[in-house]
Figure 1 (cartoon, helix red, strand yellow):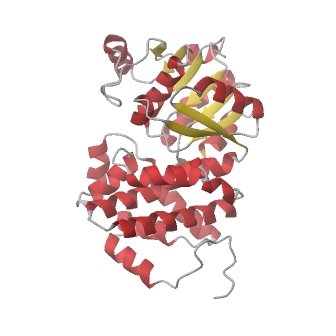
Figure 2 (cartoon, one colour):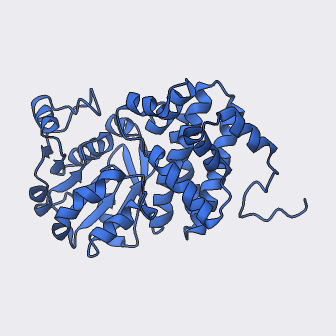
Length: 340
């Protein structure tokens, strides 16, 4: 089924561009809003987004524009692909226009002030909106280049889930539904932190066993944290948990992995972020996450360790050594370790 109305995509970064293209390939007319008029001009002239997805042709059904009110007035379904630091500022002035619409957040980040996930920020800005979260192992370039990909749309609103599935389902992109919006969104935000560590480990030539240990302990840590905040632990066995964690921690295409890799090569955090030239949400998330874990007294040694590396002058070797010396806990928190 093709949408009668156009669909809005907000944000001219790599993921916003990939989603806009995907929707257009499925026969939708897409109004793709971005802040930068030069970017709009470049896309209109070359049908490429040269800064974020160089070499990927933008579908003719994607209409780039800088007029946000115009884009919103024409659409009922809106995908929000703005960096976490810019989302509130960009959408507050158009809050009234967003009322009653279907808003789907694709941003995997946490707002520092008060530990708010993006769907919670959307709820604050537009209490009357119907809100969902799209998350999963979805590297933007691979989505744009038609690598077979699956994602999760999470919302308590079943009709919203169906609409998003209809709009995005295609030959190379499959969308599963979940009712655990909070768990799916936490999975997407938290894994970015561990991807930085995985990138560092890779740059420093650490073994596959080490990386596997880090990823698995990261999954345990993420799940422990999310369950304390009310998420369903089973969500983390799915695409938005273990699926997203694996791809982000093992792919050089992942922005957070790239930042970690640069750190592992000896660059400063500032230089690593500058080299990337895009937002790596994990850098913003780590401070907020460490503070929240301490506040709730949740055991998160990897988060504490990464924070020590990024902001307290510790090395990855020191952190891994501390991890190895720590008293071993049970392997999986939700299975009682009887018989030990």
